[in-house]
Length: 116
Length: 116
Image 1 (cartoon, rainbow over the protein chains, first blue to last red):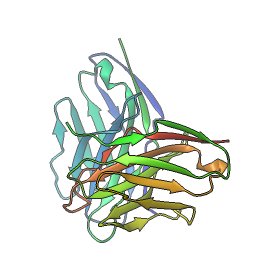
Image 2: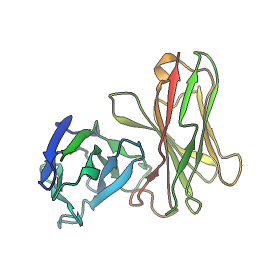
Image 3: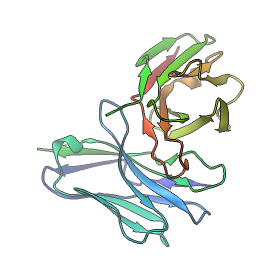
Image 4: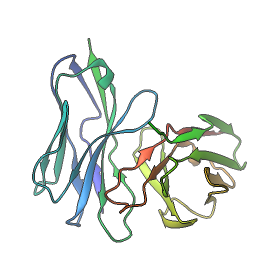
């Protein structure tokens, strides 16, 4: 079964500090893409960062970076210099490459609160 | 920046009634998706649609569900006879015409459906 597990239902962090959200996944495929989506209280899901499984280098997008450990099937998100606007639900997801697998498989999400 | 839009934002219906949820994907996108998120649960894939036909569907997407692209801009999800367990947030997403797996899916803000 293909699954995504986010073991932290809720987290909080002080403004300007760093926080890491964990994600593990399970797939028998070798080629896939991993994503972190952010869902602010207004409910629009926005892509934060993506990682191709064939790339060893961890993806970064400004204050957001990932720690991708393929062998461990781990894909954590680090948010540096947290801002109040980072308060949101964060979903980890993956999609298999090729074949007919075109749908995203999501975790349950981590609710992040950034406190002033 | 172009966005996926969805209407209505909230819908309340009686069990057994038909509902149609509407989505306007990003204009140059050719792949369309519906996902749902039952409160407190994972975001789950329902169906993908390309070239005026269903590409994939999950086991959730039974005969009570149908999708349609009635014109050049709208993409609709119809639930023929709603059940209590259909209460959820329904998200529409779209992506460009390149390889679906690597193309980012852009999500709408969702329609909150409540079946009484």
